[in-house]
Amino acid sequence: MAANAATHADDIPAKPQRIVSLNMCTDELVLRLASPEHIASVTWLSQDPRNANMAARALTIPANHGLVEEVLAHKPDLVVAGAYTTRSTVALLKRVGVPVREFGVPGNLAEMRAQIRDMANLLGEQQNGEALIAEIDARLAALADRPRPAHPRAIVLRPNGFTTGRGSLVDEILTAAGLTNLAAELGIDNYGQIALETVALGKADILILNTTPDGPPSLAHEILHHPVLARLGDRLKLVALPSKLWTCAGPAVIDAIELLLDASAPTTAGKSP
Image 1: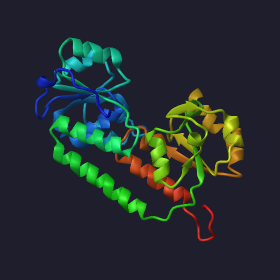
Image 2: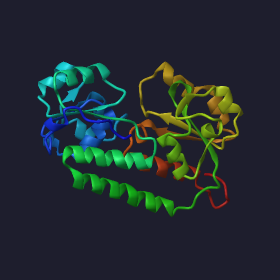
Image 3: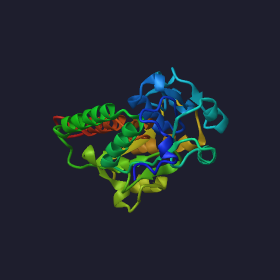
C-alpha cells in the first residue's frame, strides 16, 4: 500500500492550511504539491541540497527534527510522516488527537504514481498531483524511445555494502534504463547486503555507486572507496549516481533513469563510452 489509513480523518480539512512533514520523502511531495504558505514545517534533512531535491524551497520553510514539541508548536491541521521513521513522535501525536497520515515506501513506478495521487488528494491539490504524474509519464515516454543497450548486467552498491534486488523501486529503475539487475539474479529481495568479493567476482558490466556528492566522511561510505572497486574499473564501468535521485519516489527517479541510460549508451563503435 502506498499509504496507511489516516487517524482522525474527519479532523483533516479538505485543504489543510498548516501541514507539518516528518520524513524527507513526504517533505518532497508536500513541497512539490502544496503552496508554501500552507506548509508549516519540513524536516531539516530536506534543507541540505546534497541529500534533497527540493532544498531551495525547503530553506524558506521552518525546519523540524521530528520532535513532538516542535510539531505541536506549529498547531498543524495535518501531519504527514513515513511509515518507518519518527515512530515515537507519531504515536504521541495520535494520542493527543493530531491528524496524522503515514506513507510507506513505493516498490515500483505504479506505486509511486499512486502515492503522489494519495498525497495530492490529502492536501486538496488534485490538479497539481495529476500534472506531476503527467510530467513523469511524458518523460518516461520520451526515454522509452531512446536506444537501449543489450541489457548489460548492473549491480548497485550502497554505503555499508547494501544493494537492491527484486521488489524495489531501484530494480524497476534499472529495468527502465535497459539494465539487468545482478542482485535480483542472485536472489536478493528488496534491500540486502552483498560482500565486496561477490561484487568483484560477479559478471557485472556496470557497477553503480550510490553516493552523496561532497558528503562528510563516514565508515558506512568507506566501502565505496575501497581499492578493489578502483581496480574493478579496469573491466567494468563505474557509474556514480547521487543518492537523492532515488532515495525518494518522485520525479527525480526519472533523472536517475536518464543518467543510467546516458552511462550505458553504446558508442558508434558499439561499446559503452
